[in-house]
Length: 365
Image 1 (cartoon, rainbow, N blue to C red):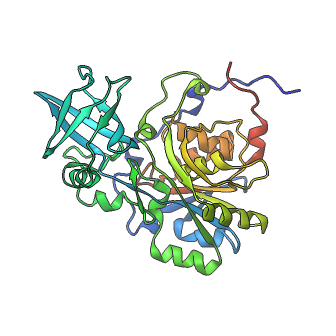
Image 2: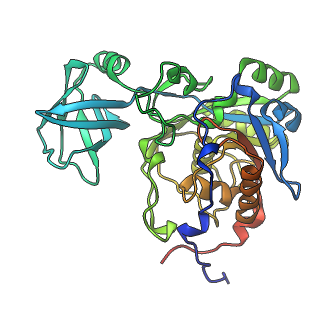
Image 3: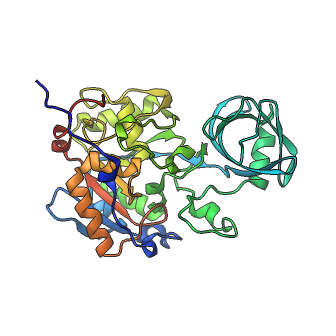
């Protein structure tokens, strides 16, 4: 017999963060960032990203996301009205799901002119709903790619202050070393800490690597508006786990190695495809999995991730994975020790706490 559902409120995931701890540029070099180890010890341990090889061992596998950030923010006009377009997800040939600002008067059939690239016209396929719209960029993907390269902006999160727009170095700084497949509008930021030297040290340690793809959407920046997180829904994101990647992960699991998710995007996709016994299946499609306290994790043993926003879906995810009380204490420690937060900030390595799932049962009414 299951226990009654415990209350879960968005406010439970609030915390105070001084503005000067929000990183405005990455550590240089990337692997010089700090690393907070959370669990299995009772107290968090202050380390550095370069210590990661010593924390892993032969037979462990790191699972990385090879999505590549595209210059997804465009400025467009319909007549005199200026409209900001944030690409969110590619749907089919030439068609993108996008989030738009100043779009209240848009109608199906309207044509938008991209500032800085008048050769590309965007056609609105349907009237916006909740700030989201489907746009037709035309049949030529090369023209779209060239337009984004010329007129698009790196879609930095709103907490990275760029009053004059993204800096030239942001195009490289906001791109992980694993980036291969264009399609993300936000970086899987845990991967921003990796360098060739760090990867070589992990190889020498006997740590293997598996690669999956999850194209991070613009919804990752959207706050939760309701009081009960279980009533919320995430924007769907496209992902793929190949047969080779699944085989690598399953072989490591069978041999007793640990599965280390590099970033919350990798963890979400692993949990999407994880079977009851902890093995993973190949996959290609959309996922809108929302990981909250009460979820029984099967796909990973460790999570490397940055520090996340209060009241955010990602802070809820790490609390679910490592234990809410433990994560709240670790974040308080990180603030006291002046760790750098968010996309360009420092990292933490979280051990899965299976007891956390036992504290929550049921689903929202």
